Image (cartoon, rainbow, N blue to C red; front, side, top):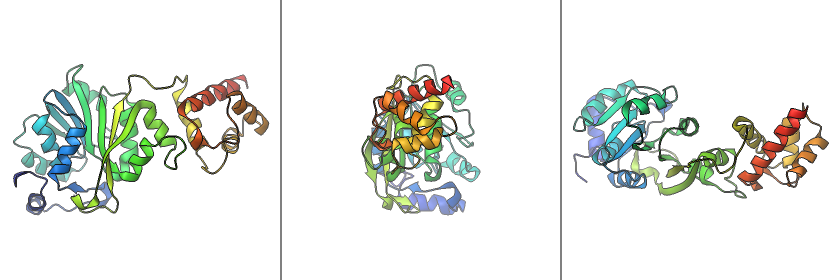
Length: 294
């Protein structure tokens, strides 16, 4: 690590002061000031000289710089116009980095990928995500079926726990199932709040999502499947029967709901958190069939 690295407390402070930059709480800006952690993130994403990287929220370029040292190309989305001149300076040694001043949630990421990278190129998303929009960004990246092999992101530890959770645990919920439908999820390592400026209130974790070739279950209607999953967790302490009756109440009597759950080979008294994805897929198929008969 040298003083030249962006991610040292001294250099970060110097850059921010020179540009008169002030943090915007509304954008969830927390910049990393530990090069060791940044290198561990790049390691977790298995970035090599043949990897193309999509980054979100580069800040002043701390992670971007470490990615650029190893990757073939980096394309970063930055929403904050005030950071663009800073990034132009800090990333000037790296001509293979491109910064797009756009909100990734509104951007056509697929079009950007096809315009900036070659077909079949080794691609990964690597980012220190703003905490207030972590879930919408992750779900957008997963649902858009981007040609990436993995998504490795810094998120709140609590969110990483929820996404990587398995059935029967307190963290398991509709977000776990939504993410694991598209990817294998695991936590690479945790990150203390002390390595950020300003310091967030919570610890973080590096979440690694390895994209699946195909989902682990076959469902006819993905939107209906996810709707049913969300409904199963609507009130966590209630049984599947109660949550499903509430959700399908306008179309099905409670006795019909109970019958459908039993036909799926599931005890209606179970709670959503005890069900595996295969069981949710079976429920989705059964309820979809029953509603079609109406």
